[in-house]
Length: 163
Image 1 (cartoon, rainbow, N blue to C red):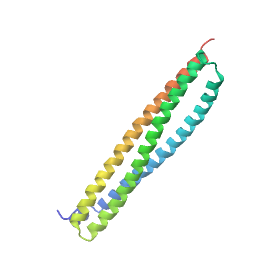
Image 2: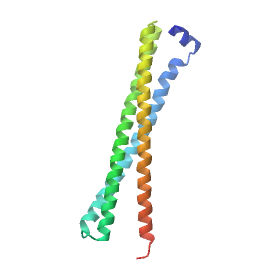
Image 3: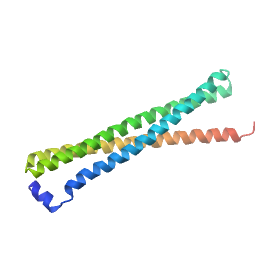
Image 4: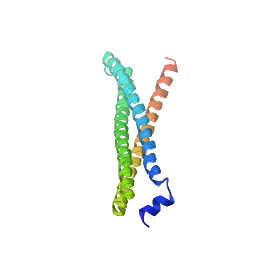
């Protein structure tokens, strides 16, 4: 089927191929911003725990608790950095997919079926890569949140327990 027929049958095809990556790009931007804020909070918390750790006597129960907190904070920061990298990769993928879609639409307008099909395949591949990065980044965020909640529950239990 010629490209002109595809576009004539569905006038929203070109618009959809450009808008979908734009919406996903916006989602990645919001996730990146939130993840960056989470990293800042983990860094601040790591500094506080590190100062407290230096003040405690090595081998004490408090020292062991603080050391465990530092290990969790380190794991959380690694998950967050990894998620942020994935979100940036997804962001680049979606922006690229949008540009590729524009190029494909331009090729279709000039009747270059082979170019349209090539850019459609490339755009689809880049878009799928972006979705994969987005999904994996979200999974890492969920894992980081679970660690944060576990740590918060332990701190609350310790604070509420009689000494």
